[in-house]
Image 1: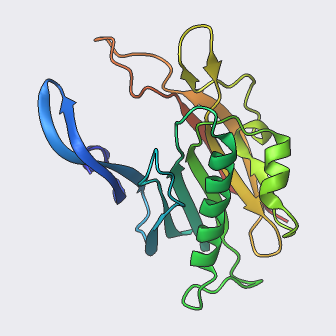
Image 2: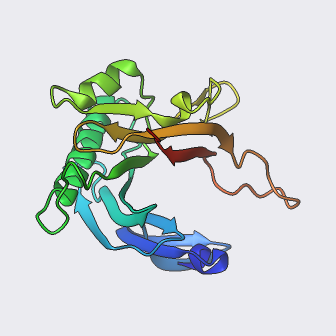
Length: 220
């Protein structure tokens, strides 16, 4: 909530794991979790628990519905497990995140129809590298396609967003877009990796870099 207040933005927060953390030398009993910040007011939202992994529980997916240029805008945010060697579990969790968001919007109160097609974006720290093979598996046989907005928006490779050390940078953070009969087609442009520099005190905005993509409605 602090960052949202400072920026004058709406905040939707989904609490996750609660534990004591050391922040600026002081112990705080607090929650980690997911947040979506926006200029627009959230119409509806949901927080869903992902399938449990005994070694790393309390992973969730937060979805929020907005109005955008007269269209429904559905944004889903998640943070997948960090455990090494668990790419199959991460893919399973990502599929569950997409499915839960689709089901959330398709409820009668929101009603996806040919004239009420939402723009659907799924964002977050996926903790594994998503290539074309993974994207094809995510879309399955549903007729829905999953797009990497950074690459399709002109983002340059390698597009690293995290560095374990100088020798092993990787691309872990994504903005994905679902398209199909029930979803509005949009265009992506001006994609770039941001927050790559520290401030004057040597403090980085995050341990990950940011992914920025401009999304515009497709005009026919």
